[in-house]
Amino acid sequence: MQNISTHKYMEKLNLTWSDDSIRFINTATPRARQTFFYVQEVGDFCTSSPYFTERENLNSFLIIYTLNGKGLLKYHGSKYSLHPGTTAYINCMEHHHYECLQNQNWEFLWLHFNGPSALGYYEEFMRNNFHILDSLDPFFMESTMRRILSITQRKDIHSEILSSCLITDILTRILIENDTENLSLGFMPAYLKTVLKEIDQHFQEPLSLEFLAITAGVSKYHLAREFKKYLGIPPNEYLIVTRLNHSKTLLKYEDLTIEEIAYSCGFHQVSHYINLFKKHEGCTPLKFRREWHSNEAVKPPDAQ
Image (tube, rainbow, N blue to C red; front, side, top):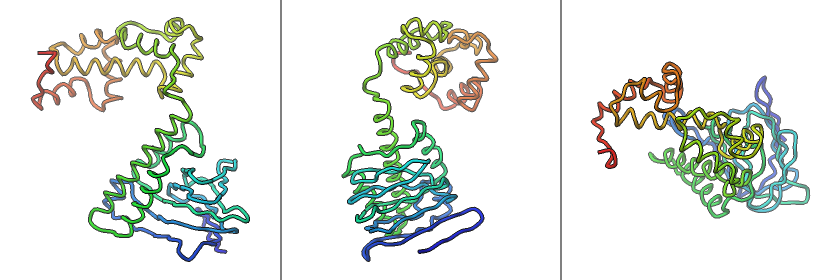
């Protein structure tokens, strides 16, 4: 058994795996580290008891996809069964322990990766709290993980771009399945659809949470909680974004002053509109208009 320990990083291992198991350690180029999702390590393990890995404070994210047998993950104070078809998505800065169960063989594909937006993706996944995914398409997961392994081992001029694309594909599937499993998005309550329609059609008006709750026939606390659950943002934020989207159309295609646009979109103070626009777009409405017109934009067919 290996026991590697420093002031920050801790790792304990019992490497009980088959001779044909694969572990490939990759050194990413500076370009990849600054721009892409990049592979740190990737492999295919066939393990037996007492195999385990325990670590924390490793600047990496880990995906484990189980092919055969059973493993056990200890993470966030709970235990999770890792059986065929399950995917575990872990932040390795946090303490975690995974092992092959006694009297079992456990085969899994695994990927350590990182990148400029890796933490953001993980935080998005964790909006619904940590859990094991078991509804990802098995063919997609196994074939994509094996392609990442093959591409990384091959190491040619395109390997980092291709592996980044494949990692993005996996993370996209994870986030979509995560929302689908936890939120049942296909069954959004009818009252939320009513609220969305009300906002989309009357965003210029002073729509309060109380008014929207009365329209929906639920309490404002229930509406606020369920709206964020299904839409990812509170009702007020959705209203602001709707108003800003309409204001961008007016900035692009209408010859109105900034003040006229602000009031026509439901903002009652021009300074408030400008501050919100800068917060969401990174520039003022006037700069947005100038940059758009400098690109010689043409009006859409329905505006001509």
